[in-house]
Length: 470
Image (tube, rainbow, N blue to C red; front, side, top):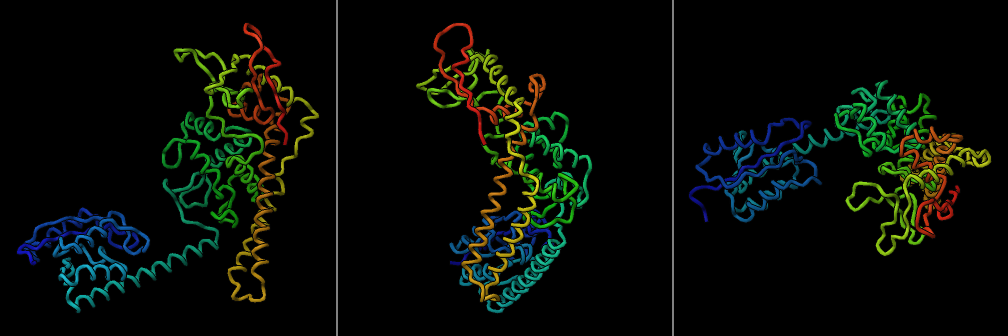
C-alpha cells in the first residue's frame, strides 16, 4: 500500500577523520532535513545515527544502520535521506543488504549529490559502482597505512602520542626524553625494587603535585601500566625488538632490560614467598599474621563504637580465638626481623640476585624463538623441515624464557633483604609501611595462638615465627 505522504528516515554517521569529511552528525541531520522537502512532502519517521562509527570495517557494529535496514524491511519507510552516499555504505556487502531490503518496495535515497531509486537497475548499477570505488580507495589507504606501520616498526618507531598526546617520560615525538620525568621513572623503579608498593608511590607523587600526561592523579594502576611497558626498557611493544629511542630505566640497553625484567617480576606478583601488593593496608601485620586455630589472617579490631583500636584479632565466624595488642605484637615481630637482617650468616646464604645476565639470555632466547616461529610460518618454502621438531623447539624456548623470568622473580626477595641488611630499629621505622610489610613477609610467617591465661603481659611463646625460605 502506497502512502500519500511518503515516510522518510534520516541516516547520519560520523566518519573517521582519515576518511575525509567529518561533518558532525547533527549538521548532517540539518542538511538532510533541508533537502527532503525538495524531493517530496514527507512525514519524518525517525533519525538513525551512528556517531563515530566506521562503515568500512567489516567487524564494526552500526546500531543505527541495523535499525534503519530493519525499518525498511518492515515497511516503515518509503525514502531515506543521507548527507552523502559514503555516510550510508562503504562495503559492497552492506549495499546488497540495503538492496535486498528496499529494492522491491522502491525505496528512494535522497542526498545533496543525487537521488537513487533502489528498484531501478540503472540506479543499482551506479550505487554498486560508487561503493566499489569507495571500497577500492579504502583498500589502497589501508595498504598504505599498513606499509607505513611496518616501515616504522623496522626503524624501531611506533605511532606517536597517546591519550595525553605523548608517553610519560617523552616529548610528543615519542623519542626524545624528558629528563625530569625520566628521573621520576627511575626513582619509581628503585622504590618498587626496594619493596614499596605502586599505590604507595602513586599517593606520594600526588602529594608532591605530580600528575600523569593527561593531568590525572597517579594510582596503583597507572604506575603499574607505565612501568610494565617495554618502552621503558628501550623496546618495541613486542618486548623483544630494539626501539628507536633510548631506554628510560638505564643508559645502557642491557642494564635497562635487566631492570625492567626485575620490575616486571615485582609488579606481576611473581616474587617468591611474599607479595608486594600489601601497601593498601594501614597496619603492619594486618592480613599478614594468621590465626593459629583457623589459619585465617588476623586484622585490626576496634572497640564497640569503632573508634579506638584494640589490637589484632581473628574475625573469622566460629573462631575469634586470638587477640593481641598491636603495639606489643608489632614490636616483637619487628625485633626478630631486624635481628635476622643483622645475622651475617643468614645474609650470606641469600641467593645473589639473578638480574645480571638473565635479561640478556631472555633476549637471546626470544630472538631464537621468533626465528623458529617464522620458519614454522613459512614451511611451504621449507618442506624439508619437520614441523613437529620446530613446534617442540618453540615450546622449549618458551619454557626456558619462563624459567629465566622465574629466576629474576625469585631474586626479588633476595634483593629486598640485601638492600636492608643490617638495618636498625630507627631506620626500619622510617621506611614506608609497604616496605616494612614486605620485609616482614619476606622473612617470617607470623602465626598467633590463643593465650593461656588472661591478664597483663605478653606471652611470646604463643607467637610462632616461621622463617621464610627460598
